Image (cartoon, rainbow over all chains, first blue to last red):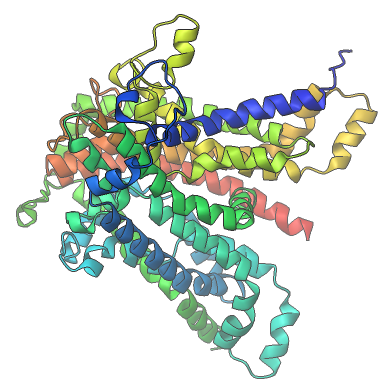
Amino acid sequence: MTTLRRRTSVDKHLLLLATALMFLLPMIWMLSTSLKPKNEVFVFPPQFFSMPLVWNNYPDALKFIDFWRYFFNTLVIAVLSVVGTLVSCPIAAYGFSRIKWGLREPLFYVCLSTIMLPFVAVMVPTYILFNQFGWIGNMNFLWGWGPLIIPTFGGNPLYIFLLRQFFLGIPADLTEAAVIDGANELQVFVRIILPLAKPALTTISIFAFVSAWTDFLAPRLFITQKAQYTLSLGLLDYFSLHQTEWTYLMAACVIFVLPVMTLFFFAQRQFVEGISLTGIKA
Amino acid sequence: MRSIGRNIKGLLFIAPWLIGFLVFGLYPMIMAVVLAFTNYNILQPDKAQFNGLTNWNTLLNDSLFWKSLGNTGFMTLAGVPLSVGLALIVALLLNQNVRGISFYRTAIFLPTLVPPMVVTLLFLWILNPNYGLLKVPFDAVGIQSPGWLADPAYSKFAILLMVLWGTTGQTAVITLAGLKDIPRQLYEAASIDGAGRWSQFINITLPSLSPVIFYNVLTGALFFIQIFTQAFTATVGGSGGGGTGAGLGGPVNSTLMMSLHIYKVAFYNSRAGYASMLSLVILVISLFLALLFFRFARRFVYYEYSEK
């Protein structure tokens, strides 16, 4: 019989630290590049932080492209996507969980199966559809952003699924009393279920925000007016130069990442628990 | 009569999803099938005509299609085991009982918050063959650093590297949650019976984790089949952002993924009809994946009800 030596606590920490470093180093490198003088970027072997740090890279980088406009665009799109998600997903999840009706199960299976529908396979007809709606290249911002925002009002099957799981876990007694008191389905939904579901609603809001904030393919396909660009699209402006300014590009990337990181540190639990749920209960 | 009323009520509640599904899901899917048999041109939609199996024959003789199928196939077959395996190792590390574990978990999760666009730009810089951070370890052992995205032999590995960095944290958190759900008693009983750590891993951990691993494999496959942003940006960024799309999928088409091929055919060549035929290939592959998913889901739903 072979006996494995029990690893000491120090060994465990070293292993974990090495793993964590592999994941952190690229981000530290991003930060370090963003604070370097231009002439030190192409010094090899590289130094991580050389004094003094060039904080001026930040204002310079943000002047280089129309950064704040792209930032603001992305923010508006992300916030409206959250609104769309909150309008559509909870009510659908309620219909799929707390009302008993004959077509419920077959339709829910249809809903679930769309999780597996690859967007790439329908991007061309979707583009044609949005073009027929007059949304592609529309100078009006809300219509121009329509392809990114309006579909969120049609719900997202994964979020509906997560909410449904949560709603199923709410005891029936809680709503039965209200029904006896004469409350209708909509009142039960709004007054009882929604307040109880706040943690789950927070989770899907975060997911919707992050996915809108970080998306590239959909904006790339549907947004053609430069004034309506999101950050993911706008960052490519840095490549229009003769030589890529890595300090500026990295500085812009740091600012781009910051809102999501901030959100994460405030709502770490919802992030991690939400992501765990997607895997386990699916 | 009551059942009709209930169905109407149910339908009203799910109406937002149902309308969204019909307009943004089902309709484009049917359109894709119809367009695949036409010569639809995005610039001249009025002149669209059915052209039978012309697109299918074009596909069979399109060397770029086969190239892209091979590239996407390689990414999927290499990427899925790597990402699921790496996530399992990381999750096992994070499942240890040591102080400060939440710090490590946060560190490993943070990259998943970085937009794919930024991940790609960052790795364009890290993998820079002359000044990039990853040249340091190669220099240290005295090996010539590969050209990564400039070299067709390494470009796919470069993309794999950035994808793994950006997604492992999320897959690991899912796997970790699965690990935490395994009842402790199973391990206690096994160690009383004298089972070693390896035997416990093979006989308890892996079987208990199989639903989670299966889920990771499916979502991973779905991700890699559609991979776009990394391949697109890596080649646009490297080629100075040219407007013709000629550099997309380079070098020598080694990163031309199926998604990228569809994109180029539809939007640079304006051949939406043929692009739809290409899309059908992805649709059929994912349909197959969805069938697998449901066979699995049914078994799992059963589990859940039996618990209650």
